[in-house]
Image (cartoon, rainbow, N blue to C red; front, side, top):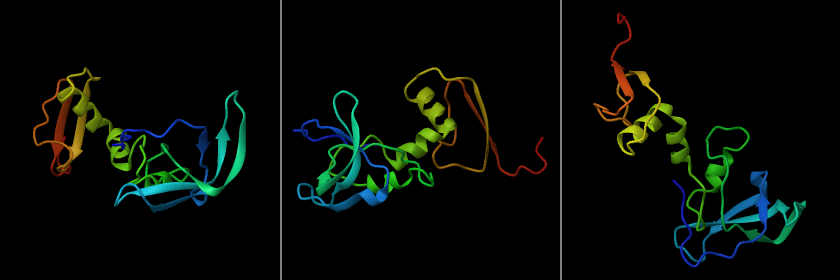
Length: 154
């Protein structure tokens, strides 16, 4: 879901919290063709000892790691997914990963079928076909009932 840091990773620095999309901008990456760098013009910085401050950065500060709320449509943070797409720095997630993890049925099926991990007993009724599940999802603890036309079914 997320991107990893190619060696050598940038040195660790103070954490900066970006609370608004207007505080960040995407520019073409100088080091990775086809990727983007995220520049912060403003942010809440956190220093040793728990001190924080709202700072403006001139010139803008380049992000060396990005994480946040990657769910599209989230009024409080859905913009993070768009800003974090195709960056040249590591990210802590992605919109496609958030979609997968938010779907309890797919998550349980993946954990049971592929990772062989125990999941709570699950009986799921699914209307029609879903491209994210195989035709016959055999997974311990997960039972899937496909409904082609819910009318007349009891």
